[in-house]
Image (cartoon, rainbow, N blue to C red):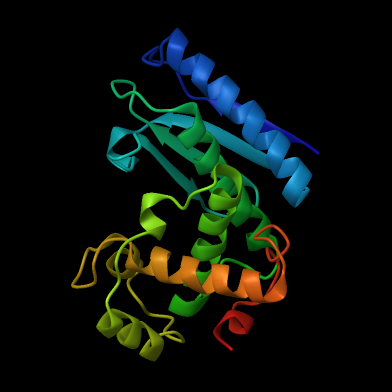
Length: 202
């Protein structure tokens, strides 16, 4: 099961301590991902991209499909190895879900994909990340439920608070739905990686 690591460091701005953290976090995360998700054929690229990090963690992550992950770091910021492991696991879950049934085209499908990846983090670390813990409002939930099938939704509005919806809303709501279904079905986030989103709303 091949999962490869690439560190984009031609500038040399990632120093020895950061490189050691990347090595440690990658190795542990990949062991877990292989064991729990049977993850393979993934390239994980670590890049110097301060504008793409979550400020509270000093780390950002993005998976654009089934086979690649970009982990953003700020060479001037410290970060914990544990948070790095969680971030990698989140994105690996996405890669495996991209393969079947896919990340999703609608708001509802995207919320479940993000909710499951967030739950996968919690199953490793023992706690939900900050974007799974915001206090969401009933009015926001009602609005989301009317928009579940929307393919023209604005991702940044629902997930990052770029519009009138509060920051992290869709992560938290998706995480709640994923966790409720996990408890009901007795399956972990890894066990639900290929489960169609529609089942989480029944």
